[in-house]
Figure 1 (tube, one colour):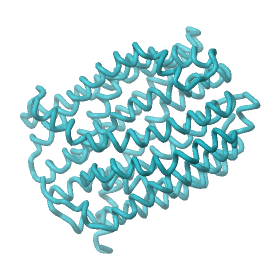
Figure 2: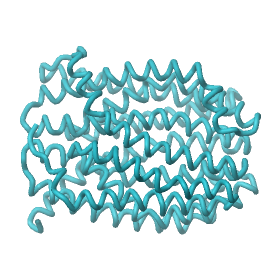
Figure 3: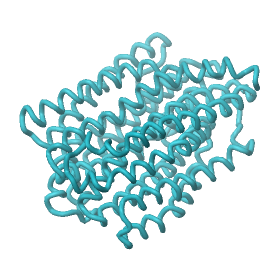
Length: 437
């Protein structure tokens, strides 16, 4: 193992560093929205929090389009079938486009009902609905970006997604500033800017994938059997992600019960958590691609070396990132808002999230390893178990009006702690080490 550590480190960094840039750019879409909208006032920021929760729940449920495609393409590539790997990824992209159109249309029509579930004040609900209706027009683009990114990651290419993500973020920030403050469109302008940026990213991915398919003589047309195969393989990952999103929605519901200031504060706390999570998730992305490729080529020693080194990198990175956020926690809220009530409830909750960052690194790496191994059934079943562990604590925080720090502690300890336990137990066994294409 020790002899393998240096080349494995190079492989991990080759994939993780560009993936880090792309993953950091992704939450910067939300950071830009939160910062620009936050200075419009408490009500628009709270509305953005509700709309983002709904949108990210829908989008998050479809993450299997990336997380299912990456290891499947990597396995096929590891087995030596590059044209087949590309064709499999193309089928996943067609599936994403179809699901995006259906879900976007349904979400646009049901926006008022989706927002009403949270029971927020009328002015907050109005702002949330204005954002969500426009954002639904970009939902197909978001899902296509997921699938296309998964295809390229499976081909061991994380540089292209980095370039596309950075360009998309730059366009998003500029368009949002123009629409929100230049054209005075308010929170609707934020949604419009993000939607246009997402469709620009789709155009870039289509050009890249078409070029690679032609080079390998892989078909760009959808194959019904392939599309259904991708959908079937992603079923357990869908359950896993549904449980994860349910935990996040439950936490937002609890914050809503605490009041508008707490809800706006929770939006900021979760934005910080998402930046930490997606930064650390770069190692999980590298693990998905390398584990899938290693199992496809039946190289079990390499797979175990990737597991060990990714865990060491994940926990260490969590310590460093958590220390930075902890040091900034007293002042971080001012990046997003000037509201005194919101600023008062943020620092302790952000500090708790920062202290849990090493645990985040452990959880996200193991999650990536098991996704890369295709161990979706275990992830789906234990995802439901983790949700059951978290629910009583979230409900108590809401009913007891315990405050934002207690809600953050429940999320960090009860939910992430349960995930760490279930993932760690599985990683100790060899049941996920299934080799072959």
